[in-house]
Amino acid sequence: MNLYVLMKRTFDTEETILLSDGSVQEDGAEWIINPYDEYAIEEAIRIRDVHGGEVIVVTVGSDEAEKQLRTALAMGADRAILLDIEDDIENGDAYTTARVLTEYLKDKKADLILTGNVTIDGGSGQVGPRVAEGLDIPYVTTITEIEIDGTDALIIRDVEGAAEKISTTLPLLVTCQQGLNEPRYPSLPGIMKAKKKPLEKLELDDLGLDEDDAAPKTKTLEVFLPSQKAAGHILQGELAGQVSELVTLLRSEAKVI
Image 1 (cartoon, rainbow, N blue to C red):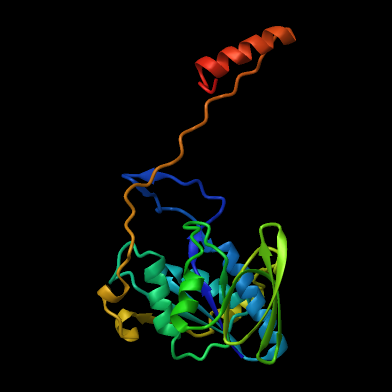
Image 2 (tube, rainbow, N blue to C red):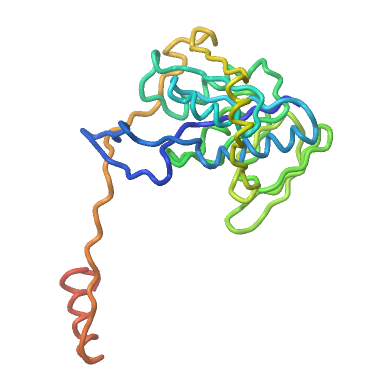
């Protein structure tokens, strides 16, 4: 079974986001595999261990993503592919990423493509469905369970606090949600083996694309942190006095009455 995982390099979830000249300050920041993509990697490895085949992890980015690809290999993936667009496209968007991934995957005969439900930086959840549309294959989002039987797939997906059961067929793309599994930590033997596993680097020219083919469709106009909330008021004294003060504050400060 050909299992492909679409992965993204993102800020560490514990990083403090700082802005400089209207953009996120990246110098010195820690980077990780997008946490939702870890569920996809883990599930692909489990499916491979049952049904055979190989797990190929693919990311769009720059040479700096090699560390995260090696981590995926240490978890148990078989091969890694870096689609390096840094020299050709700046400030790519979801369209850019999906276009590049689609071009790479179009002749790979993938049986199952897995990716995270969203990324913790952009949070749009667009790349997976865009890739599926580009490849003209079915897709199911926010899955929390998947069973493969030959070319049939039985899936449970999260739908706003409830669950939906779906039956479909391979080839298929799914986006993975928390609750699907518990991603493993790379073991020391896995880390040592990862150093010898294949990591291939491709650029736009290798995919037969030029800059215009994958140029972003959106433009970021401004990046800013939300304003800090003012400290709350603690009302003191007798209940009647508190009620009177609250009404005054709602009228004069909150301006809701």
